[in-house]
Structure formats: structure tokens, C-alpha cells
Amino acid sequence: MAYRITDNKEEMDIDAIHHYLSRSYWAKDVPKSVVIKAIENSLCFAVLAVDTNNKEKQVGFARLITDSATFAYLADVYILAEHRGKGLSKQMMKKIIAHPQLQGLRRIMLATKDAHGLYEQFGFTALTDQKMFMQLWTPDIYSQSSRSTAP
Image (cartoon, rainbow, N blue to C red; front, side, top):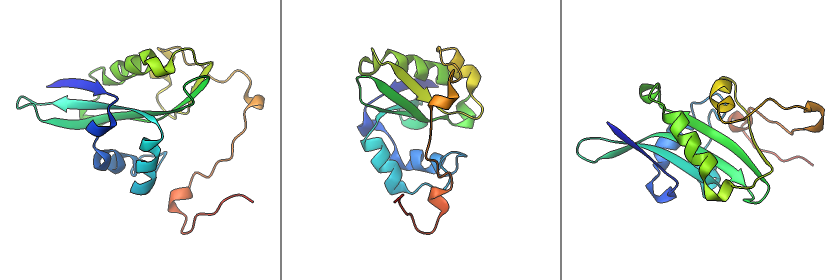
């Protein structure tokens, strides 16, 4: 099986992305409408598996929220379990790091529970001054019955 990586949103399978993310530990129960809005407002990458009949299936994804000048946040990175161990995460990260829209940024951030080794290969390090960073975090936002905003 061959693979290719694209940043063309028209080639991305929204249903497949939503299916994975809504079951992930970081976006459990995320509504499809939120996934669509996030993709529309982000720089996205898809890993596509190409079979012998040239049929493509989305097997991986990543998106960056960025101003394309100083900052980006890498989110929603995944490779389907049956396609792991083939270097696809590394290939996708190489494409991301080399993307013209992400050159010259002062900071790219991400949060991960279990993929530190992957990101360290691309120069990511733990925060050096955690006191400088703050967050407003609502981890169960998608499972709350009614969404509210801060006052």
C-alpha cells in the first residue's frame, strides 16, 4: 500500500476525521459541526492510503491553528492503529515542519499525553517556564448538556 500526505482540505474525509476525534481521549464526543469549523479555520494535513486500484482512504490527520506569522498550535494528530509503525507520523511531521505557511514562526506548541518521543525528534521540548503559561480548560466541554461561555 502506498501513502500520500496532502494539505488540500477538499481531499479530506470529514466523516473519518470526526469518527476518530469523537472517540479520542482529547476530543471525546466532539460534535461534527465543531470538527468542520475547526478544519475550516486551520491548516490541515491528511495521510491518505492508496490501494492498488488507486482508491484512497484517510488514515491520518493533523491540524495547526496559526496566524502564519508568529505562532501555531498543533492539534488533533493521529494515525489509525492499523497503519502505525510505518513512519507515517514522522512523514507527516516532516511535511508540517517544512510547510511554507509555518516558516519563521516564533513558537509552535502542542499538548500530548503519549507521543513525546515523536515530537522530540522534531525539536519540541517541554515548557521551560510553565509559570508563564496559563489556560482556560474545559476538558468535558463536548459531554456537557449545555455549553456556556465565561462571563
